[in-house]
Amino acid sequence: MSAMSQTNGAANGRSFVIDDLKKGTFLLDREALVSQDVLRHEMKNVFAKCWIYVGHASELKKPGDFHTRRVAGRPVIFARDAKGEVRCFLNTCRHRGALICTERNGNRRRFNCVYHGWIYNNTGELARVPGDEAYTEAFDTSGLGMKTPARFEAYKDFWFMNLDPEAQNLHDYLGEAKGYIDLIVDQSPSGQMQVISGTQEYDVNANWKLMVENSVDDYHLPSTHSTWLNYMANSGVKVEPPKDATLVLPTKGLAIDLGNGHFTTDNINFRGRPVAAWIPIYGEDAKPEMAAIREELVQRLGPERAKRVCDTNRNLVIFPNLVINDGSSVTIRTFYPDGVDKMQVTAWALGTAEESEPARARRLDAFLTFYGPGGFATPDDVEALELVQQGLANWEDDRWSEMSRGMGRENEQLNSDEHHLRTFWRHWNKMMTETNGAAGEGK
Amino acid sequence: MSAHAQTLANVTATRAEVEDFFYLEAALLDEWKLAEWEKLLADDATYFVPPNDVLDGDFRDTLYIISDDRERIRQRVIRINDPNCHAEYPKSRTCRLITNVRITGVEGDIVHASANFVCYRYRRYQREFSFVGTYQYKLRKTGASFLIKERRVLLHAHELGRLGSVSFIL
Image 1 (cartoon, helix red, strand yellow):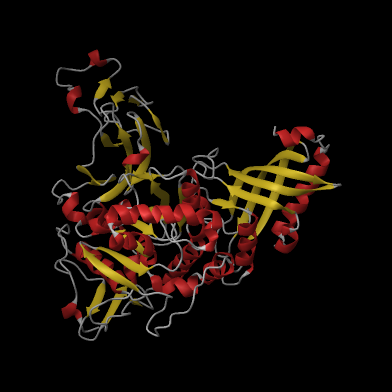
Image 2 (spheres, helix red, strand yellow):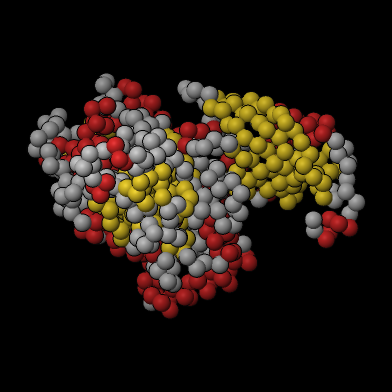
């Protein structure tokens, strides 16, 4: 391979991509998907440098509410403290390191470590140490509160942590991606979105980066999801082959680089949307309410913006591992490596805080037509990613993944091209090959 | 108990009848005879797999894993039978063991019954997965047998991730 001059990154390390803009080819070194060494570097250069999604403020309704979860491999307590502030603590006792809280969620004023009985307030301070007379004066409980991630910031109720104290602030990190979060939040008349109860979890025996690709890759839809397309057709949703020969999908969609490694698809809807594009799956009864939901959007946002909210589907990736899909329904999906060839996926449904009971039910029903471990599409995505990982056992003898689709296209990049996937890989490659990898990539 | 149910005399059912029905259903599912399995369903049948963090949540306000009405079940079977259902091609091999069968109540012509199960599932190139849980059924008594009005599958694992996709009829 001779075209290394066009390669991104590689200041202090070997590049994993051959990005030949002149020839219009992009190749990915498959070692990126199979190597333990790469995974170790990712934990340091990517997961410990980037803003990582922790949770949504709506999951913590009252002071004292908490969820424990693993974020980028770190056990944390995501909590609303006694003062009503949203907090994030490392779920590790300052004494000898035990997990402090073992409950999945609940409401607590204090968190008790079961090992030696150290007790922490939900504001983080160490409140009680049994037998504290045995310590010298040098023992200072004020410095022994639960540790927090270096940074913890929110945008519109989406809370993220960053393990790097020097990181740019979340607002700047999200950059243009904020506009796509706004499009989702605009569904709600009050601007309040809500994570709906019920969590979907599914492990995938594949490298985590394959889920990033899959979440925005619209090229795979007709082949991977033909049974879902049949289901739509059987349910009276017209899914016609594209009239334009350059398209893979029934309607036109774009792939958009949002900077800092973030990107999105932006597609004209053809599949129905709970807010608010009716299809027969929702039933005749739903028509008046869905018309009213759309009318409210038009009144509040104007006809153009309302159309943007109601009639486009967007699969958004916040680098590195947060996906917000606004398609058949809105889903928040995050995933972490658990070894090079395994990831743990967690997914939630997001709805408007004020939606009626039938609208909420419709949203959840629409979610299950496509997403999740029992959905009509996600299981086939999981299968495809696992087939990739199984095929990669040959990586040393078949080293490069071909990801050049659409490179010759000027101006617009289509959702069925691989421009957005390349956006991810270029940014990832840059972070992995720079020693101070936190710097954002310009567009 | 609904007013309607109160006006009906409660049917009688024995545990042996319910067990026979459960064993028949398990055999049809394990043998992938899904057309015959669908004949066990009432016209208003539903099929639920709730999320295991909110097992008692209402499907209208809780994100389930599966929440099918009769039509969605029909579409699910069409999908699973299609060789392009990649998650089930080649098909999983499953083996269900059903035990602790109990009749938990009778309301008119509806028999409430539950059972514990282990569903061993084998996928190609993969280790076996064990789905362990409880079936909760509402069965409509029809002569000597039953039709399924509701089948609810509660999974007992703390974390479901390890079990992967539920791409077959659990």
